Length: 298
Image 1 (cartoon, rainbow, N blue to C red):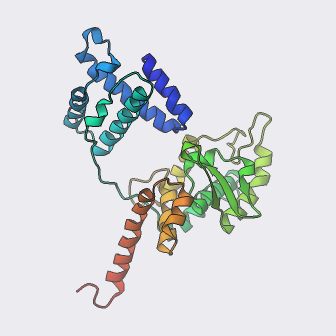
Image 2 (cartoon, rainbow, N blue to C red):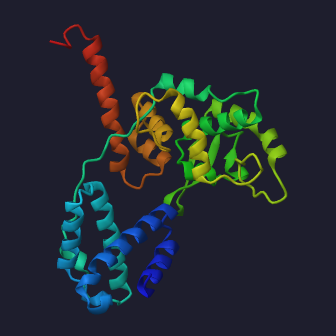
Image 3 (cartoon, rainbow, N blue to C red):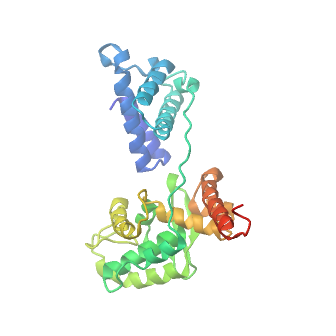
């Protein structure tokens, strides 16, 4: 890693980029640097000598390798962020990305569970097991409040207000939001809290959810638990750690929730990101119409 890359990494960390974004951006940047070494004597890359043509050559190389437009768009975002920082810090005078047309991609409609599948999923954890009780609370809270897995993993005990039915969430970019918690989730968490007291060890933090050994969860451990339950009811491949979050959003919109209210609950900075769920609900409406209307199939 070059000195400029290290300084850039420190900058985006301080800016509040998520750990996953930082890893992805640095990986993309390293790939780009490795590719353009051929343009410099002894492979010694000079930041102020990187040209738009070098960037175009890299994207052409990636395109020939059949890298998806979605991945190309993310790599372009990584370079744009890096060169914007380089110009801001006077490492370069001109941003070579200013002359690069960023690739567009079609957004895939997210997979989600039907309401019946969610009912089955929430009832899968064995309530005669202390870890089944914990897992039920995890599933209920994810579905009730539409949290990301990483957000749930980082929840502190004092972030949840069971009396008022609210949870305080720190999302992407360290942005805070308050999200409602439904009755079923509240009851599941109340059943779990005495178990948490037993799991808690001296070295435990104040996290809401703890592992079997009383340690903090990370998002990978939580996804492993979710995947176990997903596998039981999966209709098709493609489920991810976001599937319950997608189900939360889709079901709310299908039942008449306001799009801007949903944006606030999901912690989206852009309403366009939330609007993807309207495509799902419109599809459901069309299916119901064609199935139920006497002249819908004509």
